[in-house]
Amino acid sequence: MKSENNSFSNKNIAIIGLGLIGSSIAMAIKNRCNFIVGVDTNSETLKKAKGLNIFDNLFSTLEEISPKTDIIILAVPVDKIIEILANPRSITSKNAIIMDVGSSKVEILRVMKSLPESFQAIGGHPICGKENLSIENAEANLFQDSPFVLTTLERTTELTIKIVTELIELLGATPLYMTAEEHDMSLAATSHVPFLVASALALSVPIENKNLIGTGYGSTARLAATPSSMMLNVLLSNKKNVTNSVEKVRDNLDQFIDLLNKEDSVNLEATLVKCASHHKKLISD
Image (tube, rainbow, N blue to C red; front, side, top):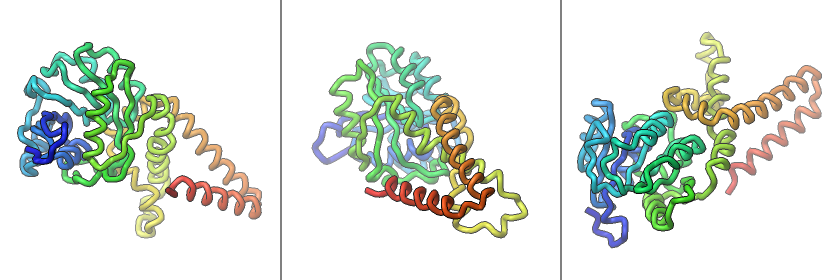
């Protein structure tokens, strides 16, 4: 039980999906809410979750969570989020706030709109993570000082926004409000396409060169280690924005090929300087 006096302390939370994000949320709010339940279909994950001692109860199905649950957090892959939202009969708490933490938003919110009116629903996406998405890599400080995107429906109430904002602040993150369309366009460029670029780079390096791999390759291609089970439906659910962004990357690579073939060192250097300057602006406060 939480000893501090704030409105979140009496909330009962259910987290569906006990990987990196779901378990990190549980760690961050442990002892700051009334009750935390974890749900995962993987028996090994449930065993590991039990050993961490961060959940008050653990279940393998949605049907087992209490009807008194106040907030349900969907921390599973995008296709599973959509599947749960499309079949809400398995959710016993009919007046709960439902928030997803999926990496694309338009398709998820489209299904959210069809939830029964008794549910309050809001889209979410923490802009943080690791390429290894298992429960072993969860940490309470994962969200510290990171943006946490919130996308609302027309029916999302001010009270729901207030409660979810309080949750995000407990995680140490900063709420960032935008539309689902804005989110998906931006994340295609900053997250989804970097994964594809890293994957393409990984596939482009011959295995016989592995002994020559240094920190440059490691830092550039590390996202290729992200499980395809996590990224596949993110990419498919945001395919238009992803393909548009890939084409921009391809155009820039084509420009480099052209400058190299022409041995145009002046414009090549100018382009590299421009890239470095743009990168600096992107990562500066």
